Length: 293
Ligand SMILES: C[S@@+](CC[C@H](N)C(=O)[O-])C[C@H]1O[C@@H](n2cnc3c(N)ncnc32)[C@H](O)[C@@H]1O
Image (cartoon, rainbow, N blue to C red; front, side, top):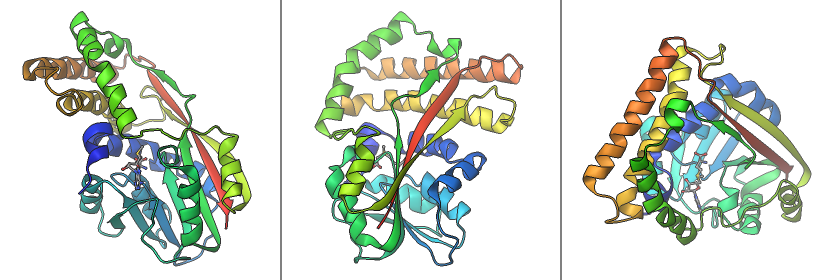
């Protein structure tokens, strides 16, 4: 049983809500064009480091004829992913020793996983399980993103600042302890690594995913989902505290922090519903690295 990622690094709720937005059907065409998957029946797709399963679910919607398998090391993510979809096979397993026979899949795909695993091992394991002519897709969120919070959320009281500064070093230490982002690679290095692992016809594509609640093309439901995914992220930040920084923040202080977070996001929803735009925005830049075995 391994629950390190879901306990200390990213909680199920945060990952699921934020990735459901990132892999929403609104962006389907962009992804499908960049993936360039063949339109063949019985396509076998393996998602590595699938977390709670948002991308695997999107793949199942977008390629309904394909069989999708999701693999992750974290038990809680896999248990949750299984509870959300019976049509996808979710397995606990290690990306550094994939538990499949050679040449089992037509496609391997991952999202924001390569930077956490030694890249030579990460790519060569996928090379082994891909069939000749199979496609390896590596999705990677690039650091150059645009993020602006609404003023009602960005404003921080002295109390909040003090709690965040009290716990900051503990969060940094956790990332170091568990090797989060231990292997960052540039946009130039990643295709080179893919070639070195034996893939050919390597190519890169960059997709922007723009989550701006006030954009008129987003429904009220999507706008609320964007705001509430950020709320969940901030709430999770408080829930980690007893694990990441034991004994540093009291139960009363945590409760007060959560009350303040809810008040800010309730205000943001109120402004949205009243038609008062804030133009808060989150634009992520995703690299899609593609190679053929
Ligand atoms: C940043 S999260 C991304 C999760 C998911 N791809 C998403 O976009 O929501 C990184 C994921 O990689 C998984 N992971 C890290 N190292 C792994 C390994 N060696 N084998 C399998 N999964 C691993 C973690 O458990 C976590 O779910």
